[in-house]
Amino acid sequence: MALDLEEIDRSMSFHPSEATTISCGTVTIDPAKQKVLLIWNRNLKIYQLPKGRKNIGEDMLSAAMRETYEETGVTATPLRLKIATRATPPADHSPPANDATRTDEGRESQPTNGNECRASPGESCSCEITEGRLSTEFLGCCRYPDPQSSIPAMKVVFFFAATADSMVPRGPGAPEDWEKLDMVWTSPSEAARMLRFKAETEIVRKALEDARRSGYPMAG
Image (cartoon, helix red, strand yellow):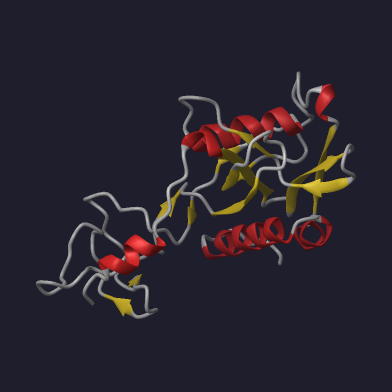
């Protein structure tokens, strides 16, 4: 399929850095105890996933782990899952024989290393989706107008899978008192029911699906 440059130009939009808030958070699970980590926001009286703004120069995965600790006192570890991703696989990527990549149209193609293009001259490559490789890529993101910004800004929250021991006591210095946040470990089914925002419920469901596909027996 040839690229429609005019349509790309019409649909492309620019958002300056000062009008974009990047936040990072986690869906932290304890597979052994079948628990999911939430926070109870005492100010808003709602349950949420732990998240917060990225620091300057900080990578998003590190920001997600740091914010999880600052808001809950839980030391979370990135969890490698079979996350469907459009990130480019490394050159040495060799998917299993029964694992195919999926194109935008939903068709299965032969596994590739993510760096090859077999399109005919004048045609574009499909953006292939790698599904069978364990990674710490982000699970998904939520976008909405930043309610805490004094100027119009769009907030984008990237969520990552993480794991922690739900039986370990909360660490020192977190959460900070002014944030009015409480740590809550709950069952996967209760987590989906308790969360205030539908998008965060979808993120949890995605994390649980990816965990099950990766060999973790998480309940639905």
